[in-house]
Length: 134
Image 1 (cartoon, rainbow, N blue to C red):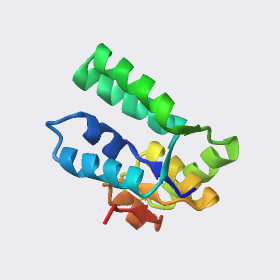
Image 2: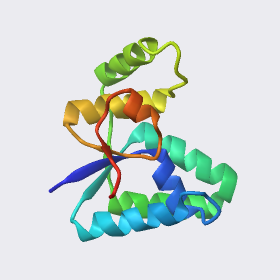
Image 3: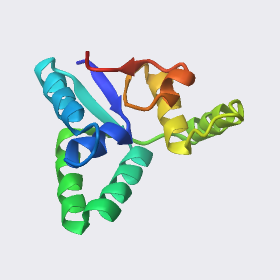
């Protein structure tokens, strides 16, 4: 099965109709399903996404999203080594404002040879394969 590693941007955009990427995210989900892709979500991305949804959309929406995500996605726990490599990656880009969430996802994507489903240009800068849906 082909798999993508999801970033927070598309996960949030798919849920919030006011997000600029909402339609794009919904179309991406449809395409992922049609083409038989599985979706993996790293636990740090799960935490970041849940918090964003909770604070912007409320408890009920966040809980519903969490239940659905647990049913539809495979959750991935980074290793301590992944966090160390992510820290090294961040320190290698002193002129960039990458988040640790993104750096961990980049390391996982590299280790597992997965493209990242993202709308964030930081992954291009980090030279990570990106799934763009087109």
